[in-house]
Image 1 (tube, rainbow, N blue to C red):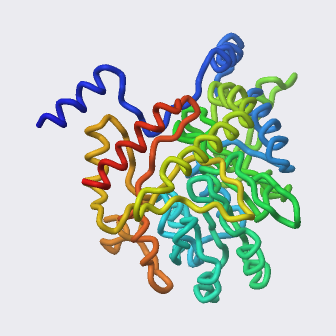
Image 2 (tube, rainbow, N blue to C red; image 1 turned 60 degrees about the vertical axis):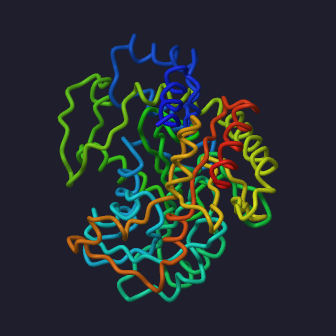
Length: 398
């Protein structure tokens, strides 16, 4: 009871260390004044400018903004030809939107296991999961750590499969490809999808972005995101003649607002400093936690540069995940359990959704049950990190 009372006092006194905290300041407030003063607050000129700036930041020919990353994944899969009856190879170990986006297309998710060190899809397991129904590979850059794109792309090209990158967490991350460091989102597969949820490195409150080098796919995504409308609202508004739109095919209401895009432009301008600071914090965690017995720290392969959207540790075998998290919460430290597994969620377990797995998902389940995410955000001080590490040490020792 005393520990719980102490935890409540920490929260009341403002001493709780949250898992994440977006960096929002006067730049974002000033950016919001542009659409507010113009009177145009839905998808319009700010969205167009955000798209152009995002495309430039990741070196992509095209970038199309949508309302969230789930919508981005849905449209990306639709663009590359995933339809009812298709299969898409992916991981269960991801936020449920990854698997759901496949189901939205009427297709079947085929789950393969992850690699223990990076929490990303294991390329060696992909090939055995390919069937005559396989249309695409949906790989995830989990928690901002780039997956082994070189291997995934080689398999996909060998079998004539599309590659969609779930880069929800990976803005600012880089991969070493063809001897050069390249930002995730260039894209290296066929389409890459990003999230701007508040826990991400760059936020618009919520929102998503698709990048691709295929002109036709970009055009179709722009059509689908706005009900299949032949002429966007803003273009019709600015026309010097009467324009009657047509609805060319089935679409969705997946638009981003100009309010969100204005904030996104301000956020994007500080991307490099945000990523740099996160990399500093991850390095400090490495140093502070290296000697905790049995604790496994995240691995960054030599061909990957993470943006460290999250810092995930694997607990010692002797530790109970929930008790460690409760102990840290009582010390005023917020944590999260390891990344979820879609195949263990009721919607997938109860049989209403068609899915299958190829081989064991033991590493995915172990990552869920044995790992926790530690607080990491640019405003953290050295004292904050020492508190986090002290609380983790104490909880593990207990």
